[in-house]
Length: 97
Image (cartoon, rainbow, N blue to C red; front, side):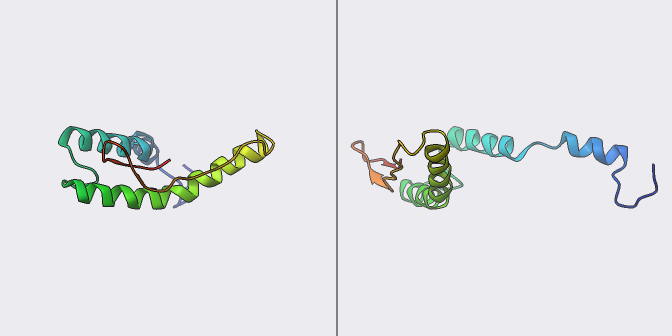
């Protein structure tokens, strides 16, 4: 040990490498929601749809940016990026693509 107060001890380094990555925590929470019939702690269909709409609002700009970059750099601007926004499906569920 160098004596640097900001340097992690072996125990701290080991502990941080054992913590669960955020994406796995999120995936486990999603599986729990599926099991429990909830969505982000929402139980009623209306609340689930509101929760979903909020997620669409948050994810749309990120997804759009990724797709624009793929179109620009990999597809050489031969593709098209289009977002539907929220739509009521034929089975009365809500979707977005």
